[in-house]
Length: 465
Image (spheres, rainbow, N blue to C red):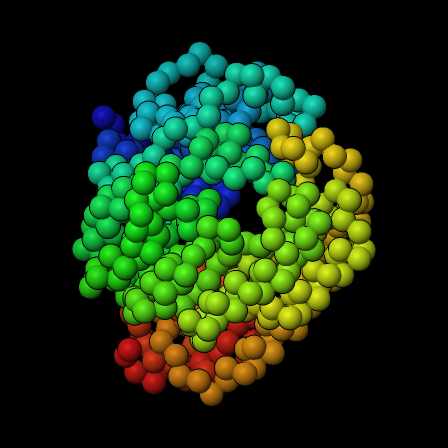
């Protein structure tokens, strides 16, 4: 084929990024040339996120901006892929038929090459500015015309990393079996399905041979890994095996679910040297009545007990969680109990999201009775508490010597290097600013932490680690 210049805009979470990398892998095999600047692309792919309103609005803006390049740039073909296509294909097809040349759902990633090559009569149509934002009232047709995803990539699937060459995400499972009342993901990502452990290990070994030093395991519920396949070893067995991949330095586990964590997993994470002591467990709330309405169960007391089990096994572990504020019916008392829980739990890293009323979820039948203003206020109040805790924790680390993965020059100045400790995940946590010494990107250094910089730390390189 001709050396088509392809640009890709990948939106949403790290699980979506892996889907993008699978598409890039197929295109790379087909001989495409990849460009960073969308203006230089012959073909542009927008991999969308359809999770919540804000994500969908971002995806729509990206699609319309891309479509405009057919008249202002060299763009000949626009392909829209991902979660929004899986969830809203009917609406997208109807509203964007003149702007988008192909739609690629979650089960069609291996058809991306054909999608970039086929021809249409409607190429070059002017973009619209009145595209609806796919509010709940418009989604009946999409649910009727959509199929649940069943796709699951494997170690032999072509994949081109979009991350720096020393780090990669490994999706160990797809879909979800939980029925959280606020979440629409099972409606389009489908039922939970694990990859075979042998296949995950084979991919990790292949990535290590390519120079990857850090892998981040991801799934909607990572701690449920293997149970759908009758794999009794589960995630504990997988991390034990990955710990034996000697060319890897760090293995990080994301998105544990409190109801599927067991002592065997905690012990496996604690005793495996390559498995970093980092616990990422979205808890969503702490008040038992709120958790019941969210269809998650548990309570602040049970959460604290589980966090205590992790801390007993891994005293230096960094704990990360996420919470939702403004869920229907959330009272001031329930919110204040969440604040008190965060004060007591003292997370190292925390994300707070405002509730989004999602079509197709059981919570959509509830009255969305917490105002947007109050949702935002509660988010800000909770993050103020977390900010103080995070800053206190950073202050306590000054004087420590830590192992740091150096990632290159600071984006705003060449006089600083940046890196991450094992307690900091890529993209979502703070960084370590290196203002003294030198190390090449992708290498590990011993760093003395000398001061704080908000959520970040500052350090001096002492030598190779």
